[in-house]
Amino acid sequence: MNIRGTTILAVKRNGNISVAGDGQVTLETTILKHGARKVRRLYNNEVIVGFAGATADAFTLFDRFDQKLEQYNGNLLRAAVELTKDWRTDRVLRHLEALMIAVNKDYSLIISGNGDVIEADDDVMAIGSGGPYALTAARALLRHSNLSATEIAKEAMKLAAEICIYTNDRITIEEICVDTESNEKRNSKEKGKK
Image (cartoon, rainbow, N blue to C red; front, side, top):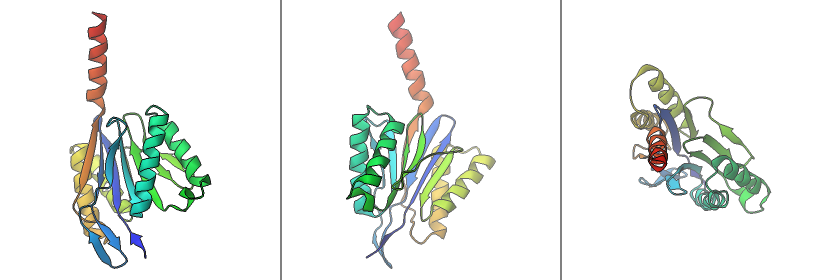
């Protein structure tokens, strides 16, 4: 049996990062589920992770990554590197077929079982069967519109769903407001000095 596809997209604009995922789970030529949740928050809601690949494998990696984030106090880059080490060497993990996008206020990463931890070159990244379509649409919208990160993610995912048979338009979006968090921390420090 071959469980296929998904589309995960991360977009950063004006201090906001949005991660979107579709809801379709496909088994060979049949759609099993329309509303799967493939995007989740981790580590005190500071990290957003999206998974593409086999569902059971994705949940295994989700749990393992959550443990790594706890172990390294939310340090996304360190947790990602340590997860890929385990993923390559652990006898059970190395057979998992999945990709992850993980973002926080500092990093946007693609993580794979081949030991890859890839940081985005620009303000958008995508994985999964519909990833190239969503990536292209998001880049065009970033360049030629004033839409917010969330609006771009939603529109790009809708376009991917129109093209990729393994992607649907039941979209889950999570957002981190980086500028708001920075301003709140700065304001609390200033109040503490008074």
